[in-house]
Length: 111
Image 1 (cartoon, rainbow, N blue to C red):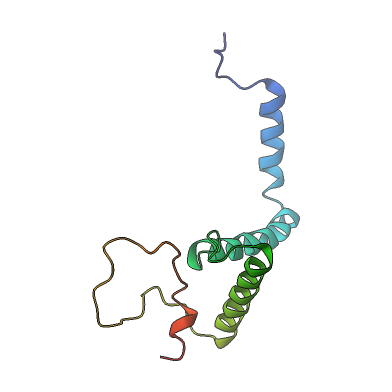
Image 2: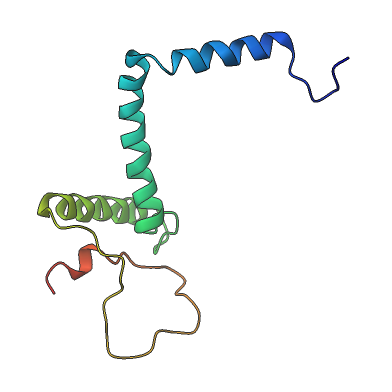
């Protein structure tokens, strides 16, 4: 007798069908697009702090998103790998992180 944690037969059959479909070349071709989009969203969220807005109001927020997208495009077109190190300013960093972290990679291109 199966416990309450066991999958119903229909759910198990669906899971097996979906896993088999994921092995087809057509599915993998479609997933490449999704993986690229999710990678870009992840870059914006984690690399450029897009989840936290510096400004109030939708017009200013939109402008921040547009400028961030422009900066990311310039960074990608430059062919340089993004840097993960913050620019050195000659002083100790604050003991706690800033409220709105800044992007580190595109600001150091001219350095």
